Image (cartoon, rainbow, N blue to C red; front, side, top):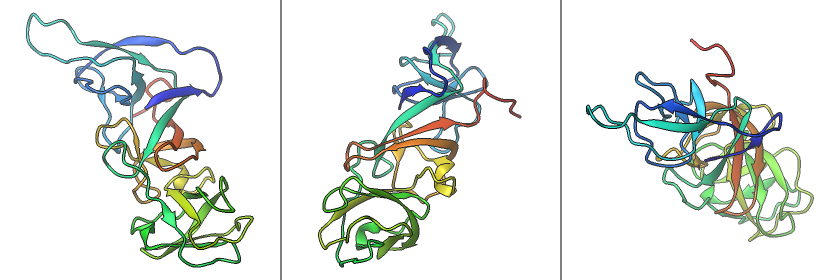
Length: 228
């Protein structure tokens, strides 16, 4: 993950913090720990400070240099994460190929929608007459289809392709959570909508199966609010 901007503008400052665990991968969200900051988990971003500017090694051996790392720590930071189609980073999103004509523009049929409900997430056209259009998913039928309430502008033809993700900006379940990939540096887009760590979805950058991004804010930030 990286910082994609800030809500209020201005420059980012990198402040040095003591570490309580090693940071072996760039782009990992930090959170408070006993001896210093540590990497977040895939689903817990509470007491976050931001993302480190470089990797760092933690040691409890006398004589070793104290572990410090610079962190971009603004509470209004907008995180930018590549969407991954699974728990492993850099997994392509599943491409849905519609198998039944929808003259209403409301239904995308393909068993590849999977079994993890994307209701309240987003579906967008990758090819066909609705290329570049996106809609909030309102009905998910496991291994069968997904449906929207606001129709796509054009009929959905057999062979039109789409991608889906569990996030949206509609204020529903798909707007408040995110789960990271195993190494905590990308966003797992193959999980059930509404699960993961608490965030606020800021924007979706909807391209193809390997270059779509989700932008979000971490809600529970050490410098942004009182936490218990």
